[in-house]
Image (cartoon, rainbow, N blue to C red; front, top):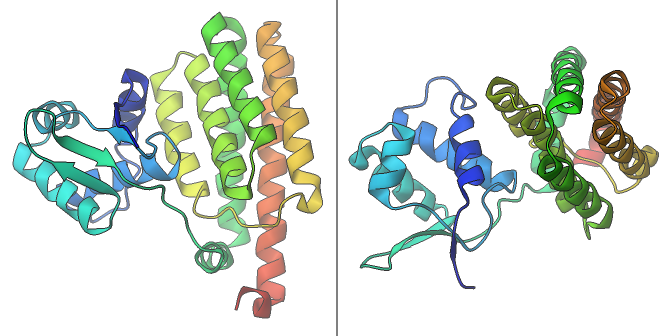
Length: 258
């Protein structure tokens, strides 16, 4: 596959993932986590070429030595490959995919209270992002939301569908023209991506999400802040309820996660 340099917007999102990493990691491991999360969310995809080491280290605010340690860890995991020379650099090699057993284990171990807490945060971010987007989004923002909604609807598998839904949430916060909301949305979606487990169409979640995406985009396009905020909050809370249902299903019937 021919590689292409990552876009400025992808780099900006990568930088906004700073702070999403677990506590206790060294700086090199923090950067590795940021890049892994960007791959998981589809911000960085197979064939994307990272900026040169000097440029990327400068953007991340770390030394070239620290960056090389991060890239070495990613190479060991098979996520990137690096070539030297004038046209060299690091290229994303593959997409990160969690197995069903990994997702089930993480969801089973996360309490209902923790899921509701995540849901409350998600609903607040989604509602305010959509409200602001209704007043601030430009035509390119709306076009991007329409494209993500379409890609979610037409996704060939559950994982890609979930990835498009996650990017849709982030895109609404981008349309709100708020870097803090975008950072918060990114960090929340990064956590939720490791919890999302279920069967396609179960509980009508896929079809419901398609309708809810359309309602959010329509309200933002119409600059109806109240309707946009309400639709975004409803979408976020429905997803939380779905996760809680799956959590309870796993805890009540643990043999399904075996």
